[in-house]
Image 1 (cartoon, one colour):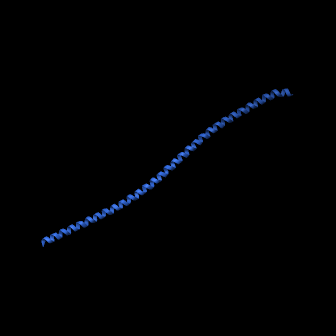
Image 2 (tube, rainbow, N blue to C red):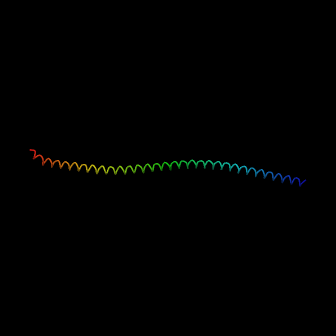
Length: 114
C-alpha cells in the first residue's frame, strides 16, 4: 500500500511538473509570437522607410540635374551677355568711326559745293 501511495505521489508530482513545463512552454510560445509580430511590424516600417529614402534619393538626383542644367544655362547666358557687350562696344566704335568719316567727308565736300 505504501508503495502504491508512493507511486501515486510520484505520478502526481510528475504530472504537476509536466503541467508547469507546459505552461512555461505556452508562455514562451506567446512571447515568441509577440516578438515575431513586433519584428514583422518593424520590418514593414523599415521597408516603408527604405521606399521613402529611395524616393528622396530620386528627388535629390532630379534636383541635382536641374541645378546642373540651370548652372549651364546661367554660364551660357553669361557668355551670351559678354558677347553682346562686345558686339555693342564694336557697334558703338563702328558708329563713332562712321560719324568721324561722315564729318571728314562733309568737311571735304562742303567747301566744294559752296
